[in-house]
Image 1: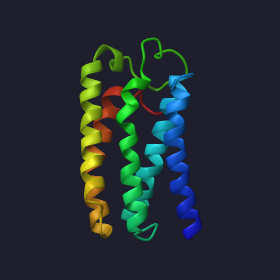
Image 2: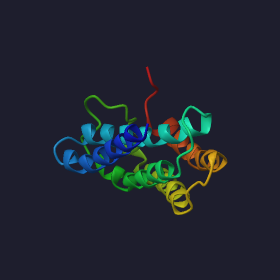
Image 3: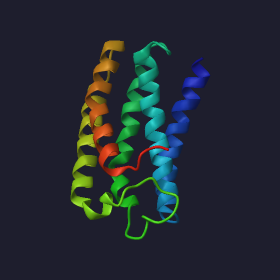
Length: 147
């Protein structure tokens, strides 16, 4: 069990760091990698909150800290990257200031939770309650519906 937690956390960190290098060659691939990394971090927290995984303070802290990698996410939407295999809505480019503001809310929420990491399952639930609406709000406005 300990090995799998360490492996999962390492994978999240590697994906986040790799996103920067990939972004230079393909921003769509980079943003998908970053979203996958963020999804893995939120998934780690959600499993703890649902009781599907035991509370692990170090894993919760690492998951929250990894979300800060989203700070460069807005840079992964250069003009012209709206074409191709992307779930991004045109709204990202037509309302770029709104997109950046929504992203800033997510980062602020994640950073606030990382600054005071959960000490128990209730803390994980509170962290998700603080971060979740920022994810949902951005996805509803700036991501095409899942098919």
